[in-house]
Length: 424
Image 1 (cartoon, rainbow, N blue to C red):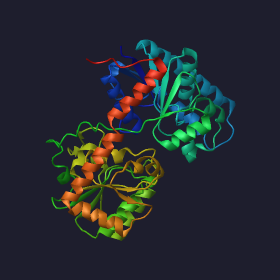
Image 2: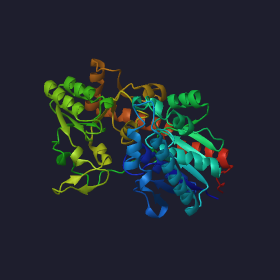
Image 3: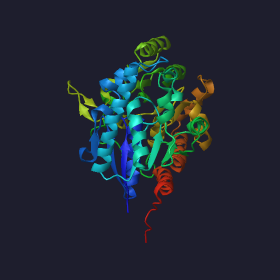
Image 4: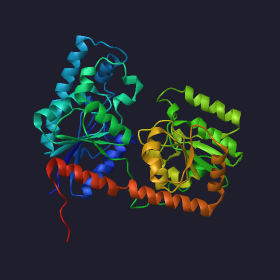
């Protein structure tokens, strides 16, 4: 008989890694006849299966008030302590309501016990687990010790207590080997490495009528070479390397298209990229105003496309990040069978590179060898086809739903004794 899973996070909405991966987990669990329910502060999930509590969102005014007084300082005011406890108490009551309403068997905190964007929620989850004894699988994406902005803080007691807690009824899942090692060293708990995944058992659908004119809509000609940078415009994405690559290709048909907006970390980096592109003579297109989480029309009547509408039309994907927790955009590019230029960020070197992918790899700077490989990928159809088909097979082996299903079954069996029903 299937179990009833309660996913918990600050939000389940949009295209952030937590929202995307939790949906994949729910899909795989559903195929094993488990049901999933959602607790969060912002949701795009089925309202009938969701308890949406505004105070659970990291953008709630009370949470922002607390965060302003606990980061970047060593001491906290007694009032801050009281408000953390008061909010945690209220959220714990709503967690009991969530468990009772949907008759949950197991909870799945998604990054809520990992990165301290919402300290009261993590305290509430920890106390709920200690009191209820309900088993849990904590899925960790970004630990606080991986981010400089959390290094100076006034809540070391709460970080030790709840990020993550050490409880006998909790299993831990991490997305890379470095996190697995650090969790063991810092917290003394073991974990299962469950990387981000895609449904490589089923190929992506071809472009439909809505997305057939993507190139025309974003201003590309039929002979232009569409080089896609499928990321936000923030410094750790290393977009300057993509600009340099296009410059060294010395082909006026090459157009660098950046899919997302700037603003998350200011606009200085975007201005630098624009200036660099002018100096290098690179035709760069910022289409963040034409890309949305869902298909729709803007106020001017123009189509807005999803990122998945763009991939089928791209000739090359650049992913020169200097840091990633894993690298969802890499898997997306492989899923859509696109050649990839990638920088050797730490997690790639440790977790992904040994798998045997055939990628155009840079190590902090663009070399002539990389440029020659990219030119061959763009101009030699047979070679490009062999490369992307090979990469798809490797990704299917290591990053498919089958891998996720096997790991989830193992965790569930260790926590509850559940085993999948045998089929005739």
